[in-house]
Image 1 (tube, one colour):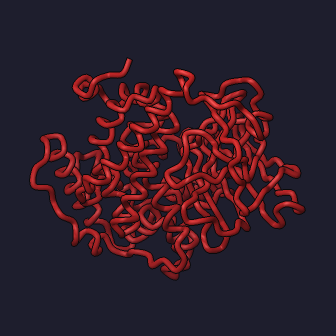
Image 2: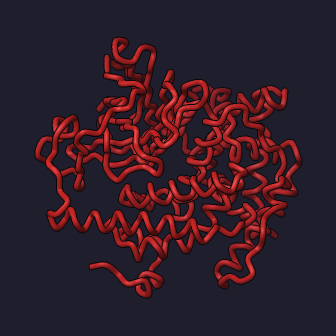
Length: 242
Length: 193
């Protein structure tokens, strides 16, 4: 890495913190950060400035009805979770999630039988090309099976701790649905904190905050607000290089 | 064992997270009451519509609840983590809208329409005071620097999109971002003096 390259990377740190670099650029910078103490120090020094931005927003009172809606959902979920623990609401595993997980219990994962898969896209993994990257990093590009989902591509760029999931050529989804990303680590499948929808160009992008140990990234269509567990078969499944 | 609301109120955010992961509604209620206002304000600041901001806030909180509150302490405070989830969700919504118009000023209608609370706690009062000081710090940035930060953070534009919107070279955008953040960071280091 020449001094000039170093200066160029250093210039990108602010853009990186502002989440405005393209995924490939962010990956390049993260590779540089792994070996550059000076840039890592600068990044950590600047980070509080980014964290200050949302705190600078003028406070607007949230409607009490919003709190009521959130807590209604939370209470209903808690009730269902209690029922499941007590064995009154458990359903047998079947379908895709059963095939994936067998008899293992992924945090109470309860597949929903009979849920129609959206007439959206059904992308099966055809193969992947692995980009460079450090430990736990690297990028994986997966192309959907052309027979089932012509033109649809899914790409996960794993940047060590976090990752960016990008779907392209996705057709419009129903207004009462969102895309939800899931990650699989061993026998556990959990939500990736990522709900997203395609834009008018058919591109859907989501940030996956924690990529540590992730073996597979999956996307399902879920009701707005997301689901605690997948309720439909994956639209896309991306195996991460280990 | 679920904690009661009074007990949950005495816990720090980091202590609430494991309880939320165990699906404790009382812990989550305290978490919402502490941060729901900031989350909604940020969502409204980004999407500019109250109904959409409500949806964004609701989806962000429910995703935290349903995903077991996977918070990593090494990544910073719970509040910063939560606000980053809200920001990402709001930007996703913005990006999904066709023909969006970027907001180019901190003094936009969303702020002008903001309605201050009649009453709030000492902690909330301190946060609002800090927010006011932060806005002052941002307001002191040269316009070309605040604009690129605004477009990137609150409108979700990539640096190349910003370069196109503003008609300036990419390197200029990156430079303005760096200078702007350095100034904000410098003011934070000086206690927003």
